[in-house]
Structure formats: C-alpha cells, structure tokens
Length: 321
Image (cartoon, rainbow, N blue to C red; front, top):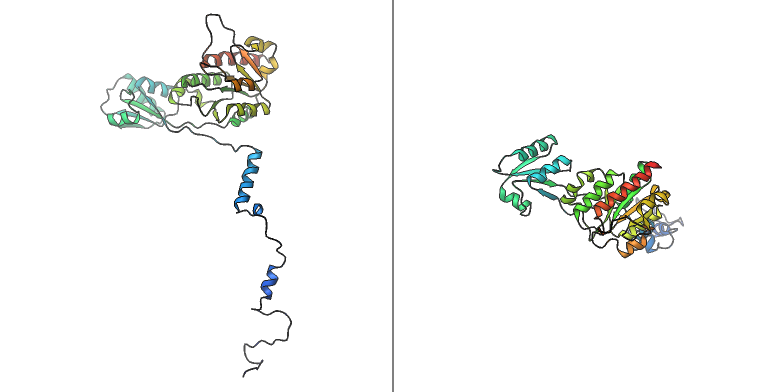
C-alpha cells in the first residue's frame, strides 16, 4: 500500500542522519584531505622527477663504468701466441680452414686448450671479414670489449689495500702502445690505477693489451669525460697532483729529497702527450710540475718511458719511508 512504512524495503525517515544515496557519506569522505599537493610533491609528476634529478646531481655524479665499443681482434700467428702467453683475456681463437700447421699454430692450439678457450675453424674469407682484412696468417684471437673503471674506483682500490693512493693520469696520449707501456709500469711499481680521457686519447685496444703484457688484467684503467675535472676531484680527496714537464719547477731527484712528503703521500702523476706534453689547463691544474733530467742531445722521452722513470723514483721514495 502506498505510504505504508511497514512494508518490506521501506525506509522510515525519522533519523536526521544522512541516508545512503543522499551524498552525505561522500561529502564526509572528502573532509580532512586538505589542499591538492604541489606538483613537485607528487611522485609521478614530471616536476617532482626533475627536482629529484637535480638533487642527485648536486650530491655528485652517479658512478658509471664504461665499456669499449666493440671486441678487439689480434691477427697473426706470433701475435696470437704472445697474447695467449701473456694471459690476456681471449674469448675465442679462430683458425682458417686448411691453414698450414707449424710450431706456432700448434703452440696456440695447446695454449688455448690449457686455458679452456674455444677453438673455432672458419673459412679464410670469413676470417678476412672478421679481422677487417688484416694479415692473419690463418690465425686470429678475439678479445672482449674492455670494461673501464670509474675514476673513484682507483681511490677505493688504494683504500682497500690500506695504502696511500698512487694514480697515473694520461693527458691526450694517442698511441695505444704507449698506453700499454704505462699500464705495465703502473702495475710494476705499485700504482693503484691509470686514468685516461674518453676523447682524443688511446683506449684499451688489442695493441695496448699486447704492450701491457697482460698487466691490464691486474690493474684498473678508468675513463673520465673531463680530465681537468677528475684531477680536481682527486685534489678534493686529498691527493697532490704533479705533472711531468720538460721545464718543471722541480727536477725528479729533488722530489725524493726536498719533497719527500709529497712523493710518499696520496699522489697523482700526470703524463702528457707524445708531441705536445701537458695541455695548458692540465698544467695549470697540477700542484707541481716535475722534470726528468736529460742530456742535451735528447729533448724528451715518450710517455711510456717517462712513466717508468717517474714511478721508479716514487717507488724508491715510498720504500724508504
């Protein structure tokens, strides 16, 4: 019956409280939430993400390890045997079908077998293509792409060993053989790493690996986008930065005498390019310029030899201390 409040489903409207469907509950649900948060406070808003990126950059650059662009090839029987003897990491040894067997080829096979390196036979045309037409004599080895350390890793390497950091930095050294020689000397005289620029400088190619005689597997090589900035970072971490220059303020033997504390403390040694030496900005960033005494007939040493001489003198000072 119409108006009968006793029928099933009827609602008796005697309460002042809101009923379902009246909108009252929805209104109460919105109470107390306050104003809409600002865009920079909303996690999924682009303004918030931009603010977070800016805060991260103000704390410091995120660490990043770079990798060389592609694998390297070592071609030729003597070269492959040398690489295998030196313990340089090799991912595969490739031999051309029908290649003449001689002592070097048999030694390469034996070394690859002993080290668990895969040995693959390919056609001569395929080997030509893989080595970009190099004179391979029917034998080639493939090296993996090199993984560079972060510049800060070199300081941590010294910290883990509880030693004063000794780092070698190269300023626009473009000959990979010089880079390999520096890496070998750095490993031999107790340095904790080598720093190179990303651009206009030699990288860890097959030639650098060979010249290092496997030392690149025992000491980290780091890459930096801007060498001057990385040197300043090392200075901020407490390192003295010295550069080798033909007309330095101090001659190398004096470094061990008058500047013994400098030689035995946290130190970065910067070596310039083969022809021009240290660039102007790098030289201005160095705390001290050091020269190696030379006879009049010889104007300068290449980067690899200069590094060996300087690191030997520094290692002698550290051993006395």
